[in-house]
Length: 318
Image (cartoon, rainbow, N blue to C red; front, side):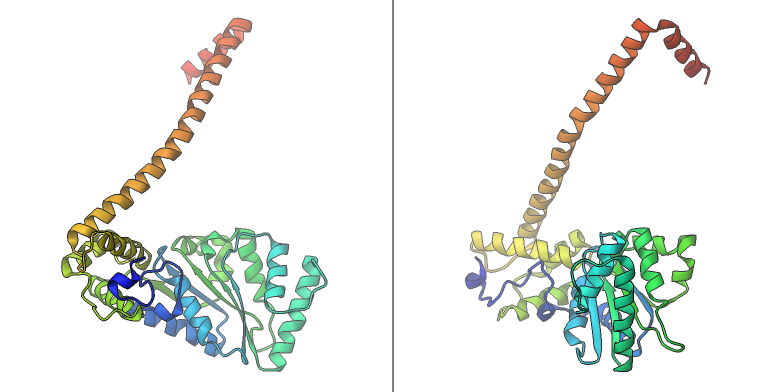
């Protein structure tokens, strides 16, 4: 809608991960280097964490676009909310293991083991990459750990990369996951962008979108974006996209602080409105529950007064 007005070939602040628009800050370069090292050396277990919106999914898509498909096989799971059988079936199907319909857990494990051995003989590495790993059911996380027991005398047949929010670290710190935690050979935490990196990020995306004018957002606008987003790329994209739309509607070639503040107010109103709607849905449930409780107490008092007084006395004594 605003592409022609600002001279873009593409929209610069799309929310969907696009490897062509990846801005590699210092911390993202380090995280990508860790992942590339894990792939190159066949490290058994790697964990990358970061707050929501810091670029974990974009990073893994960048990694996958650079992988040599002739020497590395990958299964990428972007939604790990499934049971053990579905998980194994998905893993086998995504790796291209031939299947005659839905398999039992035992059949899937046998097929997977045979496939991994074939890859090993052909000197191919196999990686299971799980995004949003903080959502993994704990039993399924144990299943993932057990899969890494598939090995030869010297090499792991299946390598695992987990990407998730900081809650993943809390899960891995639980006593039941001590054996898994001990197997983690590569670990890295993605921090948000600094103010300097936020400015570079915005400039980079404007340039990738085909803009000749890289100063569309003035310094005050960038500082305001950083204040709101706290350096999280997803929030930068949301504010940036809405700011360009607002600037277009007002025929403003420059995006200043006032436009950013207006966009942020609108976004916060939407968030508050969302919570208000949830509260409106929740409030009747609370009221009905209280009424049912009061009615139950009245009936108990009328029909069984001795029991009511006994319960009341017990509660008062307690």
